[in-house]
Length: 394
Image (cartoon, rainbow, N blue to C red):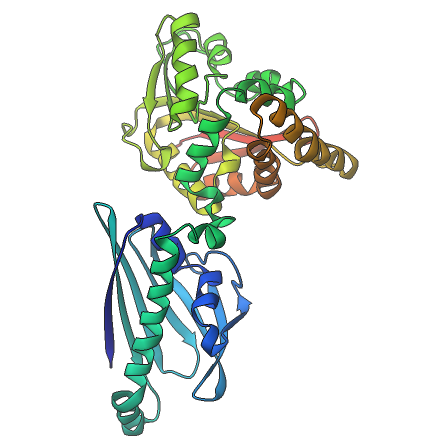
């Protein structure tokens, strides 16, 4: 079975290179000469684990189809795609990534098995192996070109909405006005919802260990202290802009009793089986399904057996008229207020974009249940906010 190995050095970040490599849109750009089209399965955006894509392309004057599937996915260091239907007997393509300082080493290992026995083997040696190598090199050169310039934003802009770097930058920019805007976007209900989403917790006077994930400016701290007055509260966020205000609040209102950690929850260093309660208010919408699975796994890992958790997020209302009005308010009115407060409405347009994609917490509830947590969905004020709560049973 022929094997092609190619190593490409790129001056960029490993996340950008990884996502460009699995971008359906970039693949189309890199294969303009063979007129490749994604006609079934994932046809745009970033392909993920267990997803398939069917490509239609012209090679050697023949229009043909090939369906491949992502069988291994370890972001951002490795993914593997394999043919499940097509003209070859088999295709195996391993994509590896290593960050070395400011450079990324992208390694392709491409193996294929042609049909037609000895005739196929002769064709491989004389023509096909070299042909496929050139296609791969051309693809990698396009990835390199996009990754090393601002052009990567043209391809990953929509998908990049969920990258930690993009979200951190977004909240850093909004940090000076986010608390006020959160209050305004919820018509003032956010304060009430923060109290309500903690109501599932069993009240205790013991020294409970609590962690508030994606804590922002610490808007949930007061409600948590009221519910569990003798608790030790640790909070986590990765936005230095948000935490700057959180530290001020900790000093002025909480006598510096809150333990503040600047970490990414998806790559955290928290202790396992340590916390009695995990809370998270209005941060779910910035996670895609893949990241929610990691969040669920991490929630289970850091909770003690018998520990409880509660999450809440602004959502699209259940009723059509209310949904239209709320969508107009978040999508049109809030950006205007954002312009008044920030001078730039773009950051606050993202609030509705994220909410629109998130829809409600039903999918997240399912993901947390599948992670082995006993989880129950909850709706607030006709679905303007939704969430879930539960317990770690084992």
